[in-house]
Amino acid sequence: MLHLRPIQLFKTVLLFAIVSIFGCQHSNGIIHSPELQTVSKLDSQFQYHFHILDSIADAGFKDPSLRAQESIYFMERYTRIEGEADQTFFGVLYFTPSDFTKWHSWYELHKDSIRNIRDNP
Image 1 (cartoon, one colour):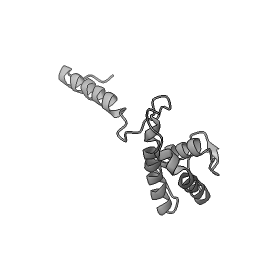
Image 2 (cartoon, rainbow, N blue to C red; image 1 turned 90 degrees about the horizontal axis):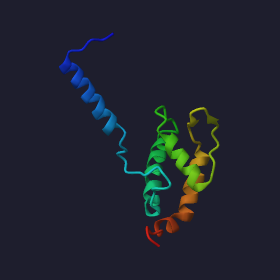
Image 3 (cartoon, rainbow, N blue to C red; image 1 turned 60 degrees about the horizontal axis):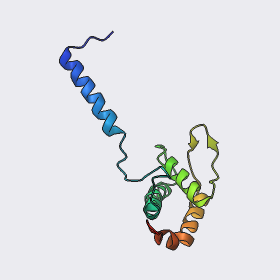
Image 4 (tube, helix red, strand yellow; image 1 turned 90 degrees about the vertical axis):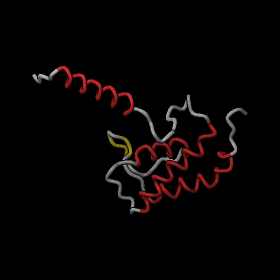
């Protein structure tokens, strides 16, 4: 068993508390819960996820960090266009050029209606 002096124990507990509290905050400002999401933020969410997908597409669709996973889920959910990649135990881990084109095409067709949605109709 690890024995710490009281000051070391205090510092360890304090550090753990800070990481636990602030580490769970979402810094990107995107609301992930559909119940809390305001519809007017939907277009900014599309822009955010397209930024991620565009950067991966520019890199030749190689994403060793798996940062596209949340963006793929978002696109499939809102466009209702399922990607061609197989579902794994961890979710969908990649997307194809065809998926990318379909999601962009869908957005181009619907972007005006997405941008005109108001918080309080």
